[in-house]
Length: 76
Image (cartoon, rainbow, N blue to C red; front, side):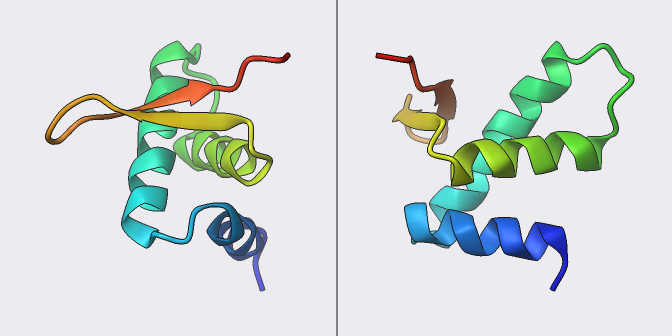
């Protein structure tokens, strides 16, 4: 199994809905891409998003009919 497959398997334990999982990972990857300095590759950013979701470091908020926002979990 590849590292990305392992990450996806770990994520599915947190978020069993594959469509929501894809949307959350895509939203966070997009945020990381916009915040990056252009040095990181897209695959690295997607892996970072997968790691954050698998670690439980993200929450999501449904913003409307077709929008989803990934929010970093605040430390308590």
